Length: 293
Image 1 (cartoon, rainbow, N blue to C red):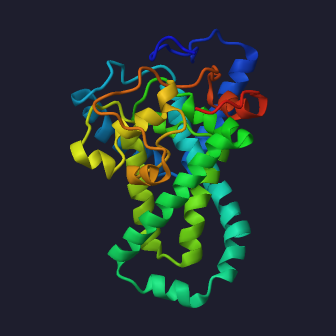
Image 2 (cartoon, rainbow, N blue to C red):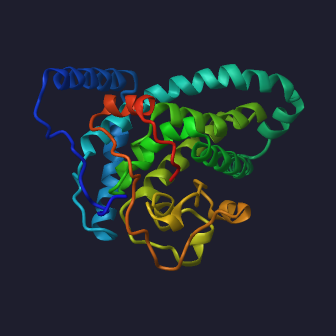
């Protein structure tokens, strides 16, 4: 068990070696390819930083630097994972969603698509909240899925950028579980777009290093206070707060942990995450730990 919440990892400051240089060049190549494929992702990163960095400065929960240990690697996660996850998502939708699409009657999709946009958006959030909850909970209970999800739980300094530290296999699995129902049921493209924007901003916010608690709304909408407990490396936090958007889903299934004005003493997992994006992608294939967090 780690003794400090903010103990930095060995990061980009290791002495350069031939293998390290090759890994660095490989990472740079992936980064540039991802930027070429999704040229708007860098703009999105800048916008997110412009929103969340000032908020974290004004309402900081823990004293930590903007450029904390591992931030460069997490920027690569932010950019490259977007492309890799999309590939996995397309494969899952074609393979699984196509089969399920054939089972659902066309009348159901027509009825869903003919509703006002606001009604569709509300229904989509409910559907994806329950689907996302069980997908997320499954990544903690199934050992081989936990190997990939553990990359995300390796975060020891919580901030908005930490939300990007996700293994593409893990991200493709959980995102497929929430997108496929929307596709099968016939929700409109506008609903898809609004859902992705909302959930992306929500994910960045609930990881942010801010002390905001939102009073009674903390039980309705996920907040940093709620999600920080999910990342806590303390016994009380294990297997709690799986919902992405609405804490009442955890309440319904008996996994809510939200003590009043308390925060976990430390974050992360006991295993040490290797430095560098490519090494972190390879980690689940080499790691033998199956302990949930």
